[in-house]
Image (spheres, rainbow, N blue to C red):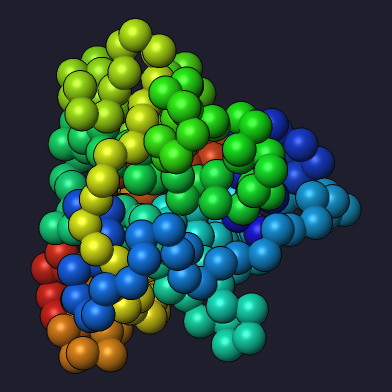
Length: 236
């Protein structure tokens, strides 16, 4: 579903739409992807939509585009193990780091078949060096989905950006903990902004309430992520 929405939003097809790891819980292997979303059938719906918000389960799909996956058995949403759902949040795109961009892009390509990822994102540094994302692909994708980001802010971090090979590489990260369950609250509108309350339900009881804000484009055909911040109210 996530890849289908991405294709529809970026290609303007039939419907006319143009800290990465959790800190709570016991640690497991960082290579584990936890709850994985199945690869979707990339057939286009016959129905046309005047607005991206008319797409079925639109706000669920927004969360999946941000870095969540749906459990095929329970239909519950959980963050992927590498996801921007973790961390303290960001108030505008200028605060996002190269590490944030790397983490989000990794979740963005999560649905790609393993063989395709290995072919497209093999590291020029050799085997067992993690994924390597070409600068043009990562930066243009981030600019398309996140408001106010620039290539310069990501390239400034030599821990992730490899100027010699013109791309972004992985480095060792934190241990992986138990994933929370994600619940949607009642979405609020403020002009072209949509504030999406997200309840992060941990088994440990250390729950969090956050808000993901997106901006709907003037033509209603696409959106961008604007911020991810703690909720002002503890009531979702």
